[in-house]
Amino acid sequence: MAETCSESSESPARISNSDVLQAESSQPYQLTVKRGFLALFLMYAIQTSVGLGFAYGIKFTQGASDGAGTIDIQTIGMTSVLVGGAFVLLWAWIDIRRLGPSFRPQIGLRPSVIKTSQAVILIILLLSATHFFAWAYRSVFLPLVDQGGIIGGGSQMFAHIQETGSVFGMIGFLTLALIIGPVMEEVVFRGYLQSALAQRMPAWGAITITSLIFMVGHGPTILWPMYFVYSVAWGWIFMHSRSLKNSIAIHMLSNLFYTVVAVMGWKLLA
Image (tube, rainbow, N blue to C red; front, side, top):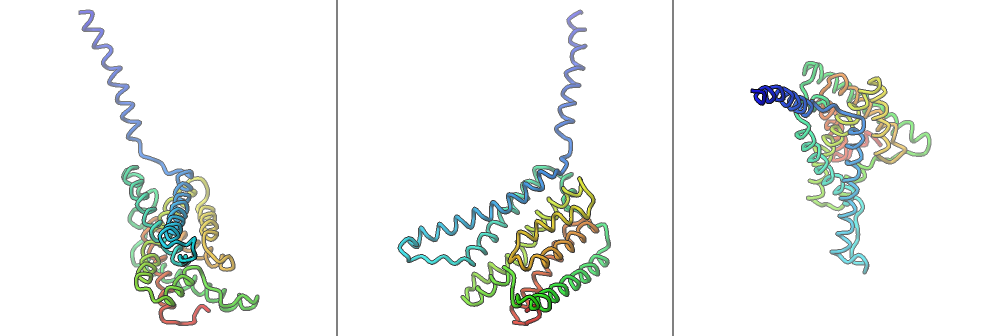
């Protein structure tokens, strides 16, 4: 009888401890600044690793040490961002699934809090404003300081692919510019980094820091003000709508605009 009482008195303690452990393990993950910068680090580390691997692969297979292998810098750059970007998105997909449904809205994988019609109007206005600034900066200001005719890294890559006439190169570039690039950068910069920073500081502070980092990651440096303005606009619509789909959409449309301008040979931004 005493043993029975002893067992019954111990069982509630065991159940209680189990419940506590289960409750702790089921707690939703909270996005941290550390994880935001981890996503940023992985993005650049993966792209760099792919680029180096591709470059050394060309040297090894083509015998570059004997002067037979010529490394195309633009092709290596495109491959590193395209393939690396796919790996980054794969990592993000695994990370999101691992951390559970409660993590998705924290990085903007949620419905927009504004109506679709309002989002469309805002996207059109922001596209118009940012591209007018880009035109004024490149076509009016830069010539005044003897820096006219400078184009961004993406435009340089596109011009090089056009010169080579590579069909596969063009397909790769369009995939990068219109799909992989915008989705990857918005997931990392807006979804992970800006969202994480916004938990520790005012929203505009998070947008500013994210945009400065975004700006530094693009070149040439003379065009940094353009990249900063673009990032601020995309960060704002993400903050306003709380949904990545809007910042991804405006990023894609911005890249599409530059691609159409390049294909048509228009001098709108020169």
